[in-house]
Amino acid sequence: MHYNRLQVDMSGIWEIAMGADRPAEGWHPVAVPGTVNTIFPDLTYYDGVLWYRRSLELPARPTPEHLWRWVFKGANYLAEVWADGQRLGQHRGGYTEFALDWPGAGEGRHTVEVRVDTALGRTRLPHLDSDWFNYGGIYRPVHLELVPPLRIDAVQVNTPRANGYFGLQATVVLGSQPGAWDGSAALELELAGEGLSEPVRMTEACSAPGRVEVSVPTEWLRRVQPWALGDAHLYTLRLRLTRDGRVWDAASLAVGFREVSLNGHEILVNGRPVRLLGVGKHDEHIQLGRTIPLAQYQKELELMRRANINAFRTSHYAPAEEVIDLADHLGIGVILEGAPFFHTGYPKPHLYAQFSDVDAVSDGTRQLTEAVRTFYNHPAVLMWSIGNEMGTGREGAEEFVAGRVAAVREMDPSRPIGFSGIAIKPGQHQISERAIDLVDYIDAHFYAGWYDVDEYGTVEDSLALLDELHRRWPNKPILIGEFGADALPGYRSLERARWSEDYQAELISRLVAEYARRRFVAGMFIWHLYDFRTPPRRALRRAHEFNHKGILDENRRPKLAYDAVTRVYGEIARGEPQAGE
Image: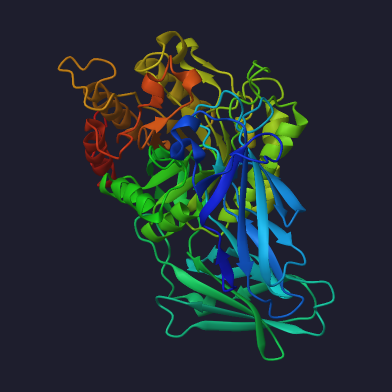
């Protein structure tokens, strides 16, 4: 959602220093937003406390009741903020947006300080053994916004579908400064876009702050065009909060009319079965860390579209909202994984948060619900994932999964909910998963053909286990959430040796064909779109500290697998039969 409020962009040159306590010296200029690990060569592997500070000038407020608010799009991991020596608050979690009010800030010069603790920990999420690089600092944009005394706090939009036609239901949360709501106000809504001869307009009287429910009748929307994979139609919803002829607050958001539902093993979008042809996607760049410009995000999504990829899975945390905005506009589906629950429950308590770790589970659940709140209105988000490879074959998994699913379901009953990487052991022909019955879809990871055959089995082993999953849960969609192999960029091999581009392309092509001819496989997600950096402690398994399973290299240049995916995904999209059909 985009507010029509006065905003002051805080991007620019700040100062930075290191140390657990506020440093008296050693300050150095730094770009904000930015990841310190990619800016400073000496801090590539830094995990610890960073201090940021800068001065700023504020204009006068229109009224004494107007309030300045800090908005941080992402600061990893534990951020504490002071302004003019006054502590404004803190936020845990490196991937979700947070906002802090700044009471009393007026016209003139001010100083802000931000303490960011980037260190990993056993009960922090992500934890000490996460398999992706821990980029630290204030790495996404920061701004100040001027919040009016009467305000629009939140909007949730649903587009229910009945008898082939869509309606629109908006839940708007209105707020105010103490004592500012004196008398009635009006909430004005305007919906404009393709198929509407003129904008739809409605006004609701509001006597007090709180929730306002607005429904646009279906008969007014019969000519709207639905949002679908590869065919994105977006509408603009504008909201204005007025009183006594004055506009106090205004906001707008893009709306896509679409419905996601399940029918047995099928995923339906607007009542039609779809097959998700996807990839996994971390939010990082070799030169920029996680401070990624919009044009770079678009390049990555355009490379997906060129390869007939119609969906991606975020990995393993909330992404930048800009990339989901682009997915909305380009008609690319998203499975959004909102919290870095990873290996939770594995028998390594010195490394991993456990299902029984109340603080860590609470932290992750808050990150998860923050992500749901942020991405709720995006039509590209088709399903939620509560975590990745969490060890859900172990004791305590049922209670853990049930609690996280309930938290998301309470916020959003409209989308399917699951988690990525059920507990299976293809090499031992075992399904040890305890929580499948608690979720809406199955997401299985198969690395047959790459990792240790004793644990991951042969390709034939994994396919037999896939068929067994369908036999036991015939009415749940099955996704292959990860599969693939590492390939060192430029390494070619006539013998198709492991680590070669030739081996990777051949294995992916074979697996895609096998999955495609199984009609119960509702989607597949190759791991990964591009090569990405991993922690140095993973170096024995990750050549020069990278996961090389990308079909693009770290500079987004195509490997052989990219052309192979373009071909095999294209055949599936065109409905061409696969080998064995």
